[in-house]
Image 1 (cartoon, rainbow, N blue to C red):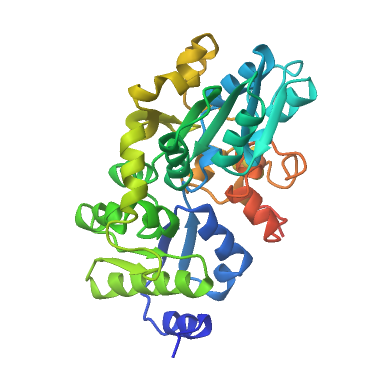
Image 2 (cartoon, rainbow, N blue to C red):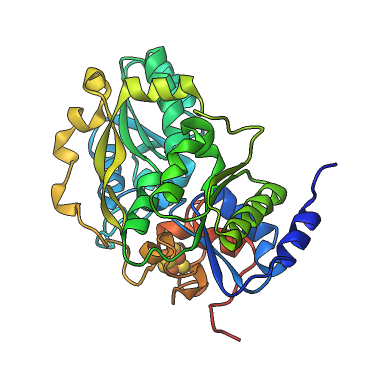
Length: 367
Ligand code: SF4
């Protein structure tokens, strides 16, 4: 018989927890399920569920968003991007376009897409125009981009690639003196592509319990139960609580496409800084489709600095799990989904937006 969410909750409540346990997730989908299902309130108070670096839109460096805006405004191109990216703000004087959405309002030809195939279709439908696909995302988004490249792209389509690998951000936290968590719920979608083994270092190198989870409350609670029990029994291993979908080795076809089309490079994470070997760059053989090479004038190196969130925005600490979204002083006051100040309130995968969608309307500590 299938174990229900209620069963998992009871098993967790029955564990003899000796004190506070901090469990980090690094996936916007996980955070959404946890928040919308109300898992925090249902679990024993000793368990803290901490949203970590799980939002690719939030960590997309400000200089890349700025570059996309300038390309759209100053070149005769169609710029396409995933819808979330359109409202991500950059730090510019009020008179300038602050987002792709504002650039569009000033006449730039900017179109939201839901997939790489849609970007390719727009290029095919507009053979006389140059189309630039601003592709920001983690492994699960970059793999379909790799597939599109391997299939053969229209000559008039170029890519402004801003892809990131998830695990190096977790490695950076664990290598720091203050990782801020005791157990990890590893991302299911990423593991589907890359294989669960990518997260073995959490256990093998750092002695931290880890479990891959899917997106249902049942799967998340199974992973939470697993890491808690591992911790209690001091028997650490990488558990797979999403076995129907996550297989050893991941998806070999998708991994091969990624290997063939991109290099791994050091990459800037917005508000965090450069994380070694955490970014995707188009491989040299695809340079003809690399918007960074075609339009080098819009690559403004002076913008490449860590900590460049909008004034007052605490997204960097939210992304790293240092604070909860409603500990930012702007949460729900100056910053709401209708008027987002930082990227974490823009994206569907951003913790601030998820918490708002989950009904958290007050700041931490407020009555
Ligand atoms: S509430 Fe708004 S300003 Fe504060 S961290 Fe979140 S996105 Fe940034």
